[in-house]
Length: 140
Image (tube, rainbow, N blue to C red; front, side, top):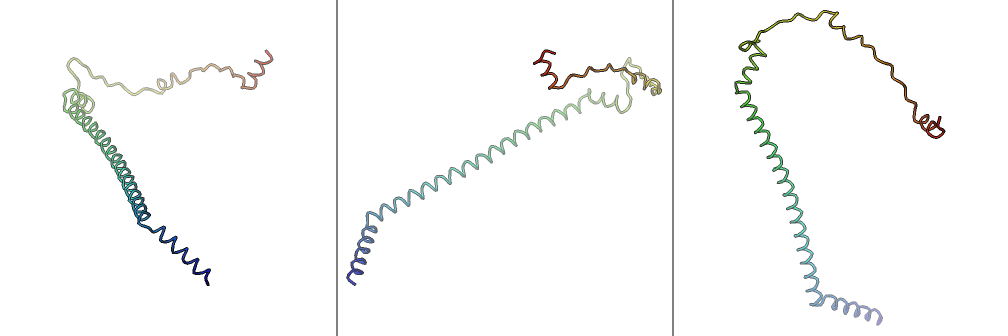
């Protein structure tokens, strides 16, 4: 029984020693440092994510601005006299001053197949890789 009491006294002494005021202050300090570190890392992570999203939006804005500029130039081109003249020539067969419009008949079968019978020279077959090496090594 005496032995059990001694063990309990030792345990009580160790508990009192570990839960002293100095240890409590130290543990609170370590806890605050861990909390502060966790908060700083979380803030940096969130800032990085927000920066990535902002960069993506800026890139998207730049692409949209280029598309808008391209569409504005296209609208100016469609409003120009040059385009209107080309469209009139294409759609309504309009001719310019001093030009003559000639309608040609469709090609005959002879004209379509005139250049279809071109003789192709026979290609000389190259030896395969193994045969090339054999001729290189043995000089044949």
